[in-house]
Image (tube, rainbow, N blue to C red; front, side, top):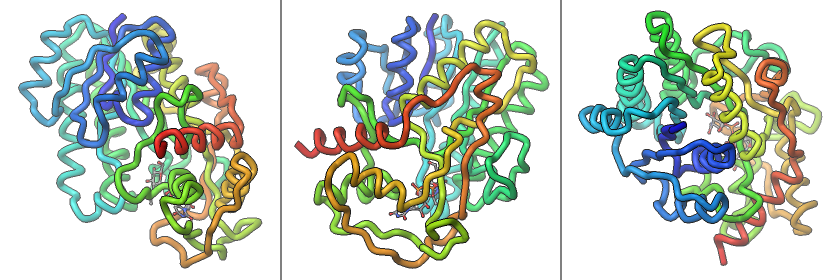
Length: 338
Ligand code: UD1
């Protein structure tokens, strides 16, 4: 069965392509290479022994999207990662984010509506919950007003898919709300490649550990948490990739009771910033140079998932603990700096 993975050269996309190929799916990747490199294909090929099909294409070009679905009429499912994801940039360039993340989603859904049957998996985010009132967060926690245009594109994306599913019985969709993805493939062939200064905690830690950054700033230690630093649910990217495959198979096998569903994808365990630093120090054997600074505007205190729904309905559970995920991130950092 042929599956389209948009953004398949990116961090989560490339790991998902590996898991799809391991399960015997044929994969075609669309990527515009704006935030990823074509040689990720070599890494995927080295791991799986199979080179996925690849089309370098900008999904904002509606005619090219139409043309793609004509040429690949045998695509039965789409996993849609392609999107811009820098929170700060989205505040400065909201229209770029709406065009990139919403426009392209609409073009793809239009094409899927023309098919007799189609399965669609959407990259959503725990950012839709904002600061939830209760921990762990269940899927029925209210969606809070978005803090940024980026967050808003995830909320709107979910709504667009939900509304489309109401009028398109041929379309089956799942939105996966990711918590904080981290780590790299254990083979060391693919991993996260942040451009410029990383905004996310784990790549900033590993870059500091290797000496590329002088010091990690810990954004605030006066939060109402046990050690005062923020709590997040860090999920290993390989576990996250596998969640996409089981979600897709649920749709392809017709096991979904509704044609639009939402699942949290996390570990269910919250870790503080200091605990993540300690994990790095354990697996690397190095002391990390860090300093506590002011809070980062827009940060929430705590977010970790209730994963009961994904465990029970998808039959999926995160397997890797934080230290193992951290070790893979550290191996990857050392490899790319070599
Ligand atoms: C970020 C995004 C969010 C996205 C989520 C999952 C922001 C503001 N939010 O959330 O929209 O859905 O990733 O990909 O970017 N930290 C430090 N020092 C650093 C970097 C981070 O102390 O140099 C702390 C943060 O304050 C936070 C934790 O580490 O408490 C995790 O930060 P980050 O990796 O940026 O993820 P989120 O803020 O959870």
